[in-house]
Length: 91
Image 1 (cartoon, one colour):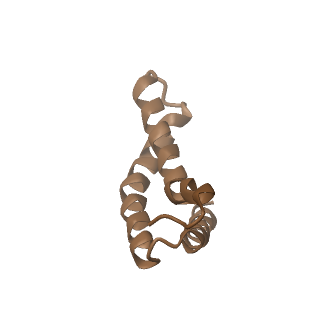
Image 2 (cartoon, one colour; image 1 turned 30 degrees about the horizontal axis):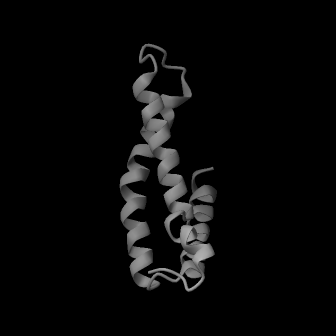
């Protein structure tokens, strides 16, 4: 689970999909605490897009960690390519 070098242990827990999941949660929390009467606010769009992403990318992150046998470099490469692909699909 952990690398031999203790300097890189945080990279296991802070991977690209985890960073994006936290970003999704921030979008949902901002939507929750803003005024819902303002429909021009970006946070409504963020919540509608990011909430499903949160529930899909969480299990995908766990699956990638299981398949790669917790190899930090492979986790970062696969998750970065996955997010790059999602970026090109949705933009």
